[in-house]
Amino acid sequence: MKKLNFAAIVVSAFAIFLGVNSANAQTTTQSDGDSKAVRLGFGVSAGLPTNDAYNLALGGDIRLQKDFFSNISGTLSAGYTNFMLKNDAQLPNGNKGRGYIPVKAGIKIFPVERFYISGEVGAGFGTDKGQGTALVYAPGIGIGTNTGFDLGLRYEGFTQNGNNLDQVALRVAYGFRLK
Image (tube, rainbow, N blue to C red; front, side):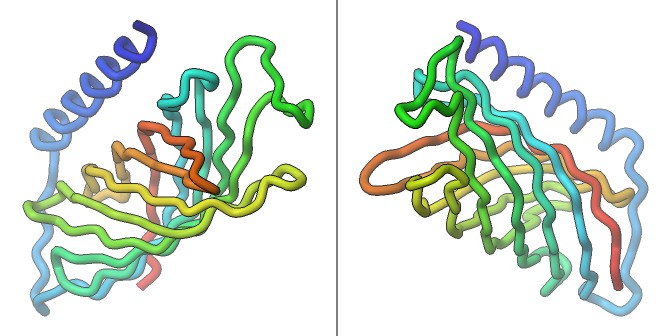
């Protein structure tokens, strides 16, 4: 039930953001055709793990985004994600959660202005002794504003040795245009 309430809050916040953004958005036009902008963004995320042993995932990241065309961008990102166990549970090594440093490359496609569909893939380097490296994949959707704010919703999976640790996460970020 807690996960359903969180999902309802996330969907509601996303819908409100869409409405406010649509009402207040300013449109910019490119006189030289497709944008070739480069942006550096900083984001925080909160997610609900799909594994019942974990109750929350928190993280942060730095993302570099390069526009290839006006509606297609490439991304490179690195950050930290921590999956926290429920209650006072502990892993066999005594930790109360599992940490990863995900490094991912991806693409953002804007089928309509400001709304995007994204996909990322990469490696999640475990921060605990003996944890190893996981394959990370993250399809998502989001809204990017002309002012640099980005609100995204993604499913992110960490797969290692046949084991999966996944989350549905909300990411809030701000990006600076570099050139």
